[in-house]
Length: 72
Image (tube, rainbow, N blue to C red; front, side, top):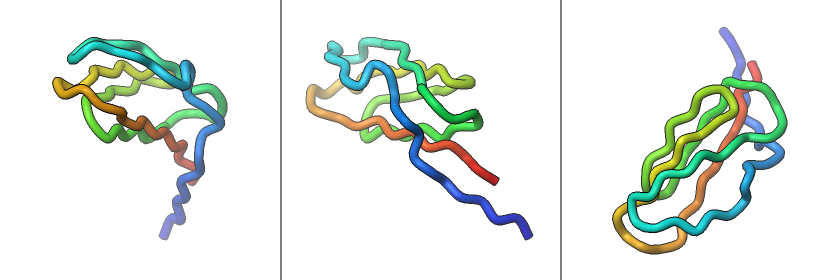
């Protein structure tokens, strides 16, 4: 059996974005080592290493991106 634990990554840079609907942006995870698990409350996020390609949703609002690193 393998025990796995998720811990919070130090930060995502930039820490805040203002985007138009469906606008794309690149963000970077600072601290820790991959693999990372990235989740967003809306829109889409695709991560490769410590870089995240984020596409804003089609509905205006305030949304959250969370990144955790995997420690096995």
